[in-house]
Length: 151
Image 1 (tube, rainbow, N blue to C red):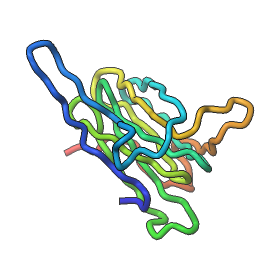
Image 2: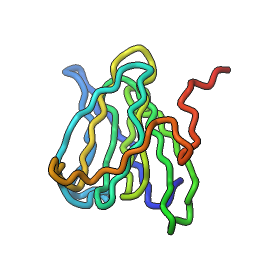
Image 3: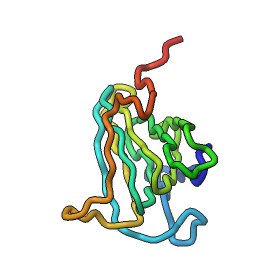
């Protein structure tokens, strides 16, 4: 696991009325502080990558559909520099992934339905001064193959 990345298995509570699963609570060991909450959609087969933040920690899960969340550690001072982590998250695997500052990440929609990812970052988005560093989804800095592995 990339240094500083933490995960939490999300438990679904179901009964005859429907279901509920908690994502992040103020009393969770993963909770740092609240910045904002948003949902982003990724269409099947589409890649939204790469970006990282200088000060923001993200808390990602997929609330509908399935997606592959990929993390890449390019931090100079990290003991896991160069490592890649993959997480298949969504309807079939409820998981919250905490992504520390400086770790690049991206999403790919997998399956046949649009995936809805929910993020609870520690900082509110500042359009005038975005805390984002972006790279193209295919780049030399992160030699990652987003294609599906068959077989």
